[in-house]
Image (cartoon, rainbow, N blue to C red):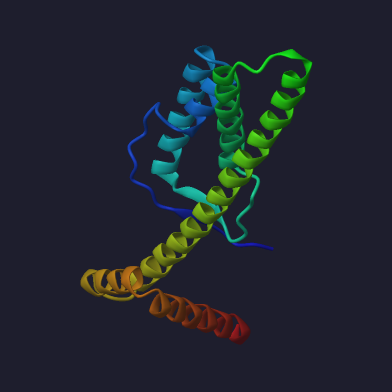
Length: 173
C-alpha cells in the first residue's frame, strides 16, 4: 500500500490552468470556460487542504492527455500548412497525426511522472518539518527545512531516521 501525503500549496487559484487548456483543446470556447472553472476549484481546494500526492507516480496523468492533445494539434497544423491532399496524403496525414499524439502523450506523461516524484518528495519534506517543528522551536524547524531543501542526501537520511524511529516506537507498543 502506498502512503498518500498532502503537499501544501500557495498558488493562487486562477482559471488559467491545465484543465482550461484541456477543455480548450477538446471543445473550444465552452470547454475553455468549463475546464477553467473546474481547474480553479481544484486549485482552491488544494490551497485549503493541500494537493494529494502518492509515492507511486503514474505515467497516466493529465500531462499525458495534454501532451497527446497538443501533439495532435501540432501535427494537424503542420499537415494543413503543407496542404497534404489526396488518398495518399490522407493516409500519410493519419499516420503522422497518430505519431504526433503518441509522441506528445509520451513526452507529457514522462513530464507528469517526474513532476509527481518531485511533489511527493516535497510533501515528505513538509511532513518531516511539521513533525520536527512540533518538538523544537520554530527557528530550528526553519533551519531543518532550509537544510532539507539544499542538501537532498541529508533530507533523505533525516527522513529515514524519522521513519525508523516511528517503526521502533510501533514495535514497542
